[in-house]
Image (cartoon, rainbow over all chains, first blue to last red; front, top):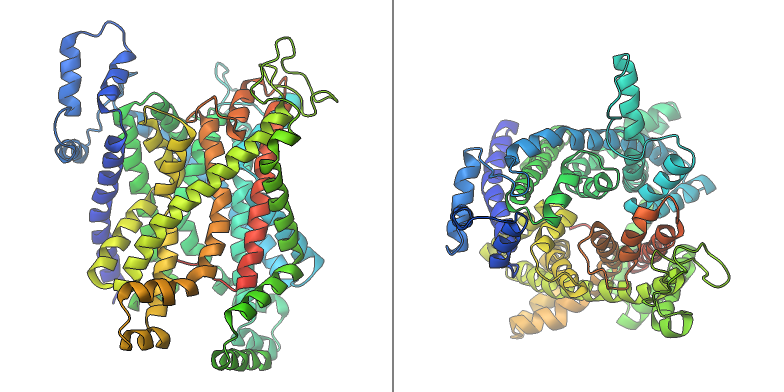
Length: 327
Length: 300
């Protein structure tokens, strides 16, 4: 199958999957016992609500209609770019999401970049030095990093580096109420805000990616073509970086796409702790207040992001490893 | 090259003289004992189990007991790990919290096992259109990050308690299990002993329960061990974020309680976090050791 056909096919599969995911979330939300209560809570936030507005909300939510009718109603609006609005702030969901999307993406991209660089360097060292104390030590550290709860790391970082030492700010993405003399100062201020959230997220990811790189590198180093490369008298550096590493990174490419979901999940918690103005904090707030439309809109957007990331992973894999297309 | 060849011939001889179940178990046990990490992990898990079991004996106080005038005391000989904002003993809370965490972990894994096993077995054994439909559903559930799905679903529940959390986690956590079981079934379905059983007129259920399932057991054991710490972690995260019942004696609740006092009373959040860490390190290392000892590949 040529690459273009493959991509088109994968894109087409994405459409029904997206509908199914949103339908699933929709059904799950409505399965929860509390549908009339949902309305009460929604209205409960605003005292003195008139009966007309209650009727209007009932109409909007489709109370009394079957779940699938409500889903179709919601989907119809979604496809026209209308994600409803928040009952608490009255803001349209789409605005709330676009305002925050960038911050989450930034957090994720920086985390991925830092973890990848560290994981590849450490993973290669551990695999090349296998078996040795260095290998055993880094592998043990990886298990520790993998098991540390990210929200606990962030609290401890806050305690030490923000409260005790005062090196980093404890919340937000920039210092409010200050005007910076230059762009560079503003950037520096932003980076200082970014540091602790990124470190909190990175610990787990470095550990995860490290294990992946190490095991895949170990596997590749045992292959015949590495023996051949060495037999040809190539320098060890060339063997490791040109012959082994390139192939060992293949599983990392797919894993990157598939871990976007986990990354987003981790961001939810970390953003809440650091009051990072991203999607994660927004989702937790919306969920705690049962803000119906923002929550649905958020789930749909996340599903779309994950699906897109999976697609990119599959395409990237098809490009770097042509065998996969014939599956 | 030589070693690869010899490894292959070893595999072949194993095919011919397949060791009995008891011998296999013995080999696995010996491998497990030999791995230092697995022993350490198993030890941590054991300590954790004992603490949960003996909580009434170990804990010096009732974790819910509010001591007025003794709020936010730092660790001392009287309160080993200090007290929280209501004067409750942090150490006792953590000891009893071990019980809650284990309960959460085991119950959620049990639900995951029941759902994942059934779906994986049916999809892998029957194949065809049933498999196609079930696997599409699995893909769809896998599409949303677990923690986000949990938050969205839990937020809609009127009653927020530990059981709601367990049920929701178990019912959303099965896809991976289902996939692994399915792929194990897909390959075992083609094996000669299943063919032999079929030719002797064994029913589908007999083949599934007596011939295929016992052979996927090691994979399932490893998956369960590796998933258990995740449920402990998810429960702690969810309660920490405010989706739990504040009256439950759980590690996450203590961290949520202590979060506003991080600056003045670091012990309230630090120690329960360490407890979560030790529990997951124990299960993770033990799971790694088990995977190695039982020779299981955990790729779906």
